[in-house]
Image (cartoon, rainbow, N blue to C red):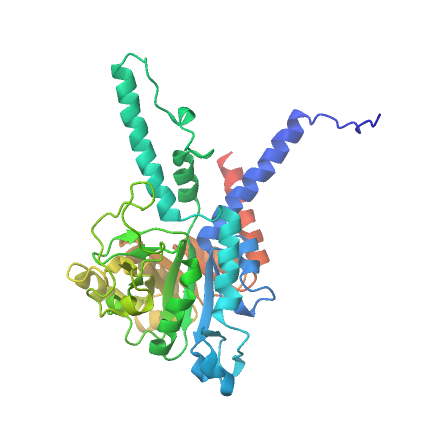
Length: 393
């Protein structure tokens, strides 16, 4: 008979060492996911995949409208083109092929072919039913039991563990830097994002945000976009509209309106029968900070929370700080304190890709650092995690 090779039982020290490695990598994943931003990601040898493989969850993509591509093929293209300048445009390098379809596949492979908001709503209802069942069981002296174990419709993953695990995963920030002609880019971007509809963070007419796995943040040329997000609300990316059902439709926090309502009816033409929601958020600048809070109360769609990031150029800030008679470090800290006080993250670009500079801006309070060397940034984060662990022990 075939004899299996002998496998020695691991010693306690070996088990503890292996668990320590797993804990270190898990903590590194969180560190990279919270602080890394893939600057001009399309210039990587493996766009998107390099960032995700190294745990970076904020990805920058520069786009142009297809009309900027010379030649007869430009009229048939339906997806924004990816490049840093118009001289690098190519029909094959479009956002659908390079990012949206690969990201959809990665999300489905990682989380399953599921709707984030739908499962979260089901989880809330099931926990509510469990609490009612426990109360009835208590009143009946334990004669009847109502739990997930007795309900074959429950999945193997409990609702509580679903929401807990999802809450621990940082959103993927897909930062779309519009280089030119935003009015030509945005309609194409809306339709191109349709494959990600189940995963997108969205908001309704009242400004209530529904968290998903991917947040689309617009940056660059935002002429005619900032302050006018209601014009770009589109069909609910949670799926096609169907009559409300307690088991199949997420519970809305506030009543939502249908396509063709306020906002110009663009959604009714693109996705008839869908509920309108906003899918675009804004990458803010330091100069925008003064007027945002004042407009929030009067305009919920364009309110302060639709600007989750405040970004600035670290190199150019030196001149601005000099004009103010301050050091750059002082100005960076002031920006971070103001942004954090309003619940925003701070992203810095133009920062040299060195451990020394990464460490410096992190200590000043910067949340997200634009990096070009993904593997080296992961190693930097791993060393920071290891150093903190040693200091705490």
